[in-house]
Length: 328
Image 1 (cartoon, rainbow, N blue to C red):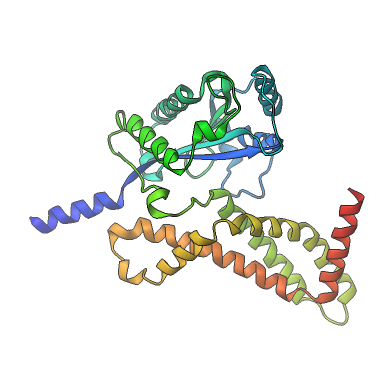
Image 2 (cartoon, rainbow, N blue to C red; image 1 turned 180 degrees about the vertical axis):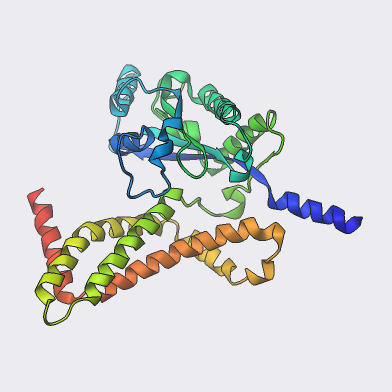
């Protein structure tokens, strides 16, 4: 009887369901790419293989954008009479979702009710008048809400720092969000906060970028492997053409990843203990660790490709990059 009870408890722990709330600040004027993604304005999304465009018709808005994101953001800032600097956070992209297990066996109506409640929580905090868009994506692996808002305070100051706050305040956001959602969904658990684990969240988009860049890297490697004295000129041109698109993306990806270095190193150290932790109750943590280890592995593979690019091709690539920079 005792064994049966413990088994059920372990199963329940493995199936833990978490409510997820994340913020990403945006400075300057990069609203267009975000708008294209959120509002599904492209026919194909090569950099995000998780998007199934045949299911995009099931996406829905909780708050529809009144027009282009940039125009709405700019108008709200001007209406508030705010001055902006180059480093001012002009808008914040909020991601809200839950563990995949939470959505299993839920009807579209139940999923819509979940995201409506989640959006109500945020709208109450940041003001309906500041919401650029709130759209739910049903065409990826796990349903999720993107709510974009202009971080204006009640006295009309553009101040994301005051609204979102520091790490301690982010923890309070998470606590308050969980408390609000658990009233309606008692099975939801509060995830372990970054302030306790000391880890930064690694955005899902970086995992997707890693997969996309690695796929391209394999194509480039195949081209490099095919270079021989008889086809050197043609194959080098082909490799150069592929590298011109891939190299800047890889450098950008690598730069973004640097700020998560502590997180990745920490998780890679944990990776050595995986065999000892191979219990059902630990599977969630194991998956999390292995995914991040894979991300580091993808980066290492890409770096190895950079290291094996023939010097003459690399020199020509960098020369063309410099020339392109001057022309701009």
